[in-house]
Amino acid sequence: MALEWRPNDPRSSLAGQILVASRNLVDPNFFRTVLLILEHGTGALGVVLNRPTAVSIADVVPDWLPLSAQPAVVFQGGPVERTAAIALARPVTRVDPDRAWFTQVIDQPGRELGLVNLSAPPSELAGIIRDLRIFSGYAGWNPGQLEGEIQGGGWLVLDHDAFDPLTSDPATLWNQASSIAASGQGVRAQDGPVVQNN
View (spheres, one colour):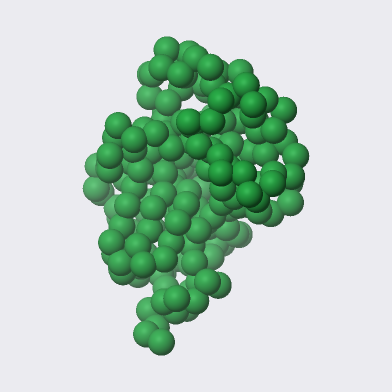
């Protein structure tokens, strides 16, 4: 199945979608990875969901531990700016869109997920967010680069509701995602988008 790709068409954005590294992708940065795309426009930005590190949240940012998802460790989000921290969490209640500390990435009812500004006081977010996960670094693509990698068969694109991106068992995430992709359920693009120039 092909996905029509039209630059500047918000309906063709991959933001909030899952990328699954195909067996053909041998880049060690992305071998057997599952990513959540956070932004997709002129370029793309995402985080690897299945690379937990041995670094405990309690050791580096203990104030965030009560809000953290299990396993409560920092995840390696990607090869770019590994000293940068990106946090995802689920809102407990409807979040005021004017709040500067939370930006919605997935807004499907019951599966909401967003970016959390880690400069916010954790105590003020208690009861507002849950399942916080912190990523060190991120994956980034220049304009057209991700589309080319998908077109070349490096990535499969799944709908975000195919499985839990913040699972407590990240070691099984690639196998789960690959099985879902093989079944064709929830697959948005297997053989990549057809790039259209508007």
